[in-house]
Length: 350
Image (cartoon, rainbow, N blue to C red; front, side):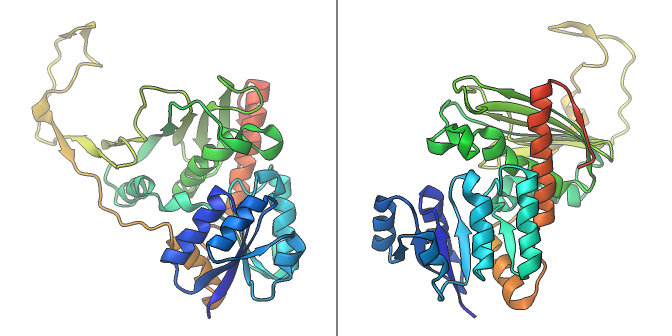
């Protein structure tokens, strides 16, 4: 069965959804769009879509069986509920809602209608993330105890509505939601404590830089960092295990795994003298005592997100991005804002 998709919010992301589905997803055809801006509706027409001039009109479109919501965040809840009550399956851009309570309202309607609802957490298919996931699943670094995940840029600008608090702007909502979702999908353990530090370097309404420390019930600690004004970026990922360290330097996935060679080397008891003075603990290993391994090879495709949605609707497959998982993430986001407001850690579990 070919499903017909309508897009609510034909801005930059809405157009991206259109082109991604059109070019890469068999069994799903984009046929309609609605936007409050006339110039975006004109673009939708130029791109071959029916341009609806009201929400009621697109929801009444009987050919449309699925809706993708790509509006500013504060409109997501009402639009998702309206679409499901109109009989449409729903894909919603992230962050799905402004807080966990709003998402609980959506989940209640999803259960009531029996329709499919999922958050567009497409970055579960990012190659850098899938490399880390594969390394842990293949036990390439032993038991992980500390994970650093960060995204850093130097533009210092929150574009469009992302700089408006009323729309749910800021980096914790924008990029943080992706990085937190990745970690919570990766780590099979609840978050038991977190501490957030939000900065307002060039913006007064919304955070443009932040750090978040998450402690999981299994003892693993994760450090999430997003910066918009950083000129010397740190690695995208650095994962510490009890057998090796993994680094993914950038989105191009340059990196390596470094471990000690099991060659019977005995460390000398004498103090080692470095540029920083004498030390034993921090003395660099001799090159012959370590080995470098390549990162695991993975194949990823963002279009697999929509392919899974179709498989769920047509064949009853298991949804990969589950609403209940997104609810956990939203609870962490709520707690992070509370931690930053209070200036102290907040306890879970989440």
